[in-house]
Length: 114
Length: 114
Image (cartoon, rainbow over all chains, first blue to last red; front, top):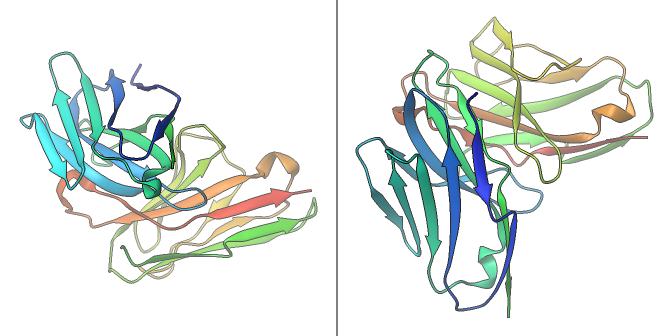
């Protein structure tokens, strides 16, 4: 069964600190993995997208890694800011259909305190 | 930020009412999607469309219906709302030949049925 599991479910950190969010998936055949940021009451916004051959991709203070062999990904946030408080969703796409089926994790709810 | 819009943003209605959630995008995207998301849970695909006059049901069974008469417009209708329909509804779109099938999301409609 194709699944995407994220951990931790929630995380609280102090402003300025770093943190790492985890994503494990069983989706096959794999096409790509993306991380989205979803602010409360808003739609998800794409942060990074990685294909099978990419190990790391950065977007400002966000750095995503991908290990396609172990089917694991992480999102590292550096020098957190209050505006980083949001849900971070790991999404994996398969290449087994023309739809490009997306599998969503439940997200990690990050809270940054001053 | 993607040019995809949803109205209303919030809706509170009584049981049995007919409602239509609007979704419009100005990017000329062929593919459009409707997702349902409950708090702390993953997004579930309920409807999608490849283009005008094309609509398909998604993975999650839904009593809602959709139509695609114009490329930019993908409304979702509930003929008789029930409390079990209370949820957040997210609309998304992508180009038919988009790299990585990246989907752009609207801000969502938070529906509460009393």
